[in-house]
Image: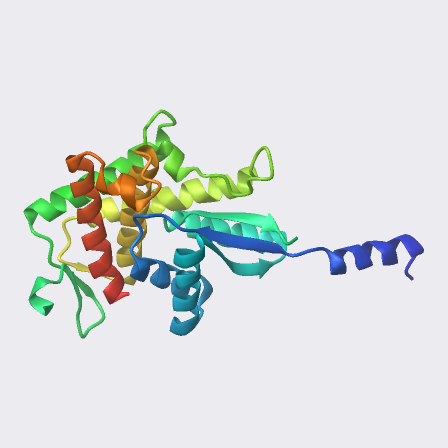
Length: 92
Length: 144
């Protein structure tokens, strides 16, 4: 049995804006290291990791993952542990 | 070129460490400083190891910050413990790469090296440390 309130809560969860994991550029980190870290943490293809790394380098930052807040925070911590400058932000 | 590599992936999967004594001294300094800085809030590298996770929030989730602290310490301590090894397995090599990279970024944060120009004009000793860590990272990343 589902009450009106339950339905409203479920709808809110389903439409909540995703959280983005953002990686920021810095002048010291070698590009190849960024690619290796993206591969290790996200398991993306070499091509996708290289594209993301170039976006960080050229634009100053890149969104590398989007989804629920808890997972975004977990990925952000993994990136920070690996020495990359990373933050989370809710999608606009 | 292969003769100049500092780290080499062997056929059995292990990673050979070809750092000379001077290289291992730099590695020891980098790993050791990460271990100390993680524990000491007054250490100049501490801020670089404890960046905000969600800048829109006043405080980060304590569980996430605790996880980060624990993982950084685990990697750095494993790197210290394997400092004199001739060969590294995958986990050890990842601990080395992560800890070198943390050291590199912490030096940059501590010395305000926010762009290439600031980097080129920093103190020679710091620039030398940065360039050495970058060399280590280039070579190790090629193996992973």
